[in-house]
Length: 305
View 1 (tube, rainbow, N blue to C red):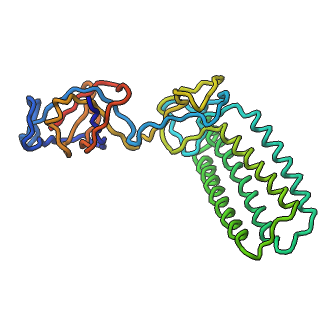
View 2 (cartoon, rainbow, N blue to C red; view 1 turned 90 degrees about the horizontal axis):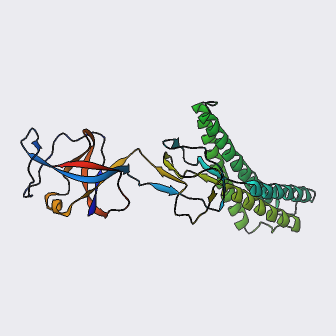
View 3 (cartoon, one colour; view 1 turned 90 degrees about the vertical axis):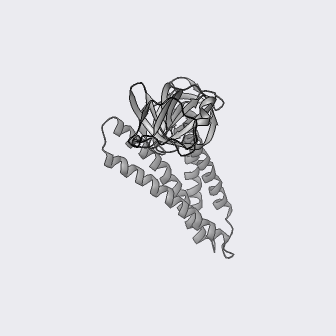
């Protein structure tokens, strides 16, 4: 069998227009214009229009925390799973200490000629990177407080805005540094400046390593499934995702019809999907057929006209 994708719309269709020349099954009803409609029973499911996103771990690690549960609505960038981060935090602390040491050594040296503007831009990028890391931590705390009913939506919005501002500032600072380095009058870094740049690069890598232990939502949506359990080992190669995420702002119905019914179907027909006695969704048939994948959640009745 083939799976027929039906675009879900907000309201159920009131009329069912029969395609001209189509072979009709026994009619089960008609609309106000007297046009017949027919039913086709098929296994199907309602799913996010953007499909389900399977979230996996970017690195291997022990699961330390799962702050979300099924049906939770999440923001883009919100923490979904936290892996054990003791080693990553230790590397970050070592990199921060080394960077602070190199910064003091560079500041004790007089600024070489032609390096003042570049040095200022390098410091700006380093500061912007630290502010971005702090903004991510702030957002995680605000989300956790909101779930515990200890913070308001205003606090959460403020944390989200701070993160966006930090991301924009980092982009601006990096672009400014790139332009300064490209200028012919800019002097090359001294030995101490070069050592500081290396330490800052190590610090950025340490922060990236810590961030890999934070598995975040790639977009705003709804948590559909949670397979992750505290204490289990998460690996990138696992066939089972840690979570399944979907955007439920737009839905579609996917149903498997028998091939003998395909001669009755035309592009643009209206279709109403019902599950049991309740009418749930209606929409127009899309142009593309999709091969059926995983098992479907329920058996539905498609009323097509």
